[in-house]
Image (cartoon, rainbow, N blue to C red; front, side):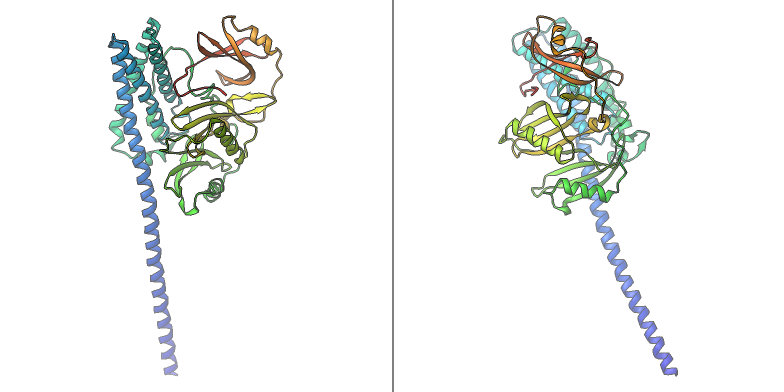
Length: 452
């Protein structure tokens, strides 16, 4: 009996040793796997932080350079030098806008600043072209540049002040801390706001391209989804990217709550994607491309963009604006209902004309504004609207649009596209009352900026 008990004890003891050994091995394996997972996640954070820091540094450089060059334009008596500086300011400010768009800014957090920088870019480009054609800068031009300079100096001072604090912190971590509607990094950037500048309203990337006039999101009444559902959605959209190359980066809790991902193509190109927590809707995608050859036409790019939105379940889209820069097509799409273009619901798409692939997408205006609308019928005819346009304007096209105007109004208008003195204007006539609602002037650069 004692031998039996002794043998039983040995078996129990041996079993415990085996169990402990297995548990130890599993624990070690778990620690190793966890360490590898954390190492990979930390590396992704480091990669993203490096991108953010580089773009912020370039933003500071571009703003400082633009401010200095504005001073040089105002101090110059030579048109050739002023033209050179104006072209460089336009380039610097365009790059500054790109830098801002690559930073983790909550939607609508700094839209005033971005709009101001874009307008400076377009306005200085238009003055450079004026000098190129042999004209002189008018006193109005000089006065406007003086106002721009004052506002830009304020912008420069705020950016440089912010840069002193950036290096003591971490942009990635700050972008994941939510205070109210915006993350902390956005709140820091909100101090970088220009003063009011009085100069003509102009079009740079399409009529009402900043049409997020309704700050309250109207079109996010979808159930919240898990991060796994969002990832499945991404894998369904980007079928050509291996599943193992889809990396979760974290969340953004701004005006839109999103899951953020980094995708790596088989060619090692990196795509950053945001998917809304409500409904797993693709909100933004962006990636860098270095192609310079143009193998696809603008018409083909438009078809690609419309098909891409259709694959996301967004129907009846029409290209209302296009621009070609280098080998990329920048397209604004808007839904059409009852032959009325719905300008508030714009979606912006970027297509690489070298590969024919969509490499940029931004749908914040669409999800802020798009709802089922009971549209009014026009009370006046297109001819009535045309008769409201001064006789010295040559009309090229008239069409019905829903235009986003001030104070969160959406107004049914006739959009009358016309020309005067070799410049293009968009005049908006209220289709109900016949009153003139708005006039926009387009600035056409060497890159196009042409409405389809």
